[in-house]
Length: 440
Ligand SMILES: Nc1nc2c(ncn2[C@@H]2O[C@H](COP(=O)(O)OP(=O)(O)OP(=O)(O)O)[C@@H](O)[C@H]2O)c(=O)[nH]1
Ligand SMILES: Nc1nc2c(ncn2[C@@H]2O[C@H](COP(=O)(O)OP(=O)(O)OP(=O)(O)O)[C@@H](O)[C@H]2O)c(=O)[nH]1
Image 1 (cartoon, rainbow, N blue to C red):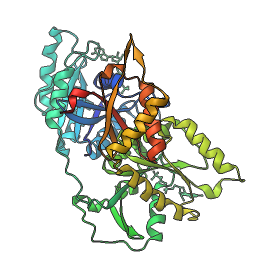
Image 2: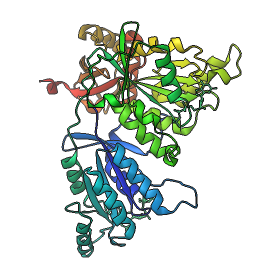
Image 3: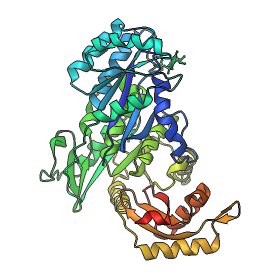
Image 4: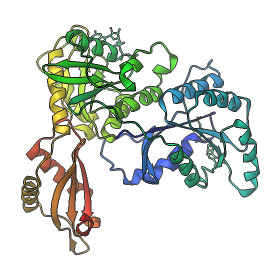
């Protein structure tokens, strides 16, 4: 199920990142902290009232100096209108309603998207009076919050979750592999789409699409049906904001949510940069199967070691995604292009694979025998049994005497043993520890 996307927009300095951190802060401690996952987060997954969503802070966009502030928030708003399901419009109680607030409000209003007005810096009760003028923006009750004190966040989350839409599932048949191509600007996403489609002229029209079909491109190859997700989004070119990182991440988020397999494109010519990690990290967190595609391989000067060395670099940079296979190709010359779809098909299979409980338990018993579970204050973790509860991604529950005794490192150990036995190439695995009595 795709998570809805929430975007925070507002003028600089109103406290967007402070509130963003308040919203995802508590969660971060719980989100498993895999080594290599980047720390300066610009998006986060959260959940409130049992409703999961992703949230992105669109602020802090570095534009050219001559770009006026108004232009930059206008762009934030434009992107949020296009990509977000709920928009949090952040204002400042100290500053009151400003001219640019009114302008942005007008844009948001016309879009018809659900908007929640959050008025920050309501640090004391006295300032509550300041929030009333924000009714004039026309979005119903403004929510007073204080990023500094952490007050009002629950009310804000209530308002956000009240407005979250039920996302319609794509109506593609189960046997269709939904593929998203992501990567920073200029890495060759559109070229690769064209290369894939140019190669496979059999574009089928009978794959059950929905309202989405205008932006997705279905095709079939060797009897396997695929849909390239949001290829229209990729074709929108030439806008300034495409080049700023937050915007490209936000563009990618929606496509990733709807995909089964995410192709993380890397520029073979330029190598790996931090921004690649943000985008790939999102695919990991969303539980999608992934393949690294090193594009522009035609222009890389190479000998027999180059490929191996490049793969090693990928492994070093993306420690949290060691499961993802790497394909080297050129969208331009179509060199090695034929290697791609078989890998996509393979990881999609792994992503939906179910392992029988008895096989899983055999592997875990062997793992326990080699390396017994940890003890804590004289108490030892006892693992009763394990079972795979779901797919996409494969999710395994470990029933134990006391989940508090499970250590992260032991969970990793079990995960590695399970991978060694059952492969699961290209897909993250989720491991949850539950008290045995929870099972009923
Ligand atoms: N008094 C007060 N100050 C706050 C509050 N929340 C944030 N601030 C301060 O406001 C300033 C801006 O906060 P940020 O969270 O960086 O604002 P932003 O909207 O993300 O700014 P940009 O990244 O420039 O778009 C910082 O100095 C914060 O400490 C609050 O509730 N009360
Ligand atoms: N040499 C070489 N150039 C390539 C290859 N793939 C794409 N390019 C070039 O890289 C540039 C960017 O390619 P696009 O396909 O537009 O990249 P994109 O990722 O869709 O870019 P955005 O729309 O900006 O996100 C173009 O000039 C392409 O011709 C390749 O495999 N080899």
